[in-house]
Image 1 (tube, rainbow, N blue to C red):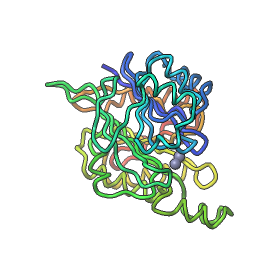
Image 2 (spheres, rainbow, N blue to C red; image 1 turned 90 degrees about the vertical axis):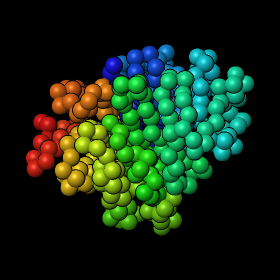
Image 3 (cartoon, rainbow, N blue to C red; image 1 turned 180 degrees about the horizontal axis):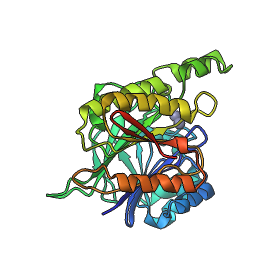
Length: 315
Ligand SMILES: [Zn+2]
Ligand SMILES: [Zn+2]
């Protein structure tokens, strides 16, 4: 029973994440154009025929490109959104086609079961794009099986204890590391935009993301959180190196074993496979995944392995 989590795109020019198991798959957000999204799915060995549902975090343009909706309607793929997302989606032909077919489903704060069989728990975010949520996704649970869990939270200006509680004990943790505060302040952007990005309804800085990661690790058992994926990095006000440094400091201080990946706008990265084993940390599988990234010509600095007292950089 192997699960896949892949970031198909992450950043202010489009976001989408894949969580799948065999023929069951779910996308978080469809913020990439339909052709790009199909290409990114192919690049990680998947396609729309394996997708059963799409869940939307919010309706900012980098998270929803309605160009994919008509194809979803043809394939009978359900769209899960918050009721408050409707006002921004009404009037779009693809959205109305999904709605006519009963494929638009509403979620609120309560966990629900998506057609893929995955349990989806919305996690409240603080953002200026209307109702905004992160998600905890769980799959493969059985009477004697632990199953796997993925946590995903981006586009939030702040977080609280309940956020860390909801994201504890996942196998793969995706957290926003949007900007470096000094780079944001010196970016030359308008004061209003800088204040928005730094504010409680903007985006998490590297420092805030690292503090959230530390809090989640503190709440998690030793055999959980094998992978940490840094999300929604600003191209102008951040770099993978700065985000990784903040994240790795937090992981090192926790004394945990976690592989840290910086997601990119393009291409799809990382592309992780993992199993619900007793101890989910499988160095062999994790390093094989890192090898694939290197083969694709990506910076080796995007994947950093950590052992207590040892900073292992995969060259
Ligand atoms: Zn947003
Ligand atoms: Zn965004």
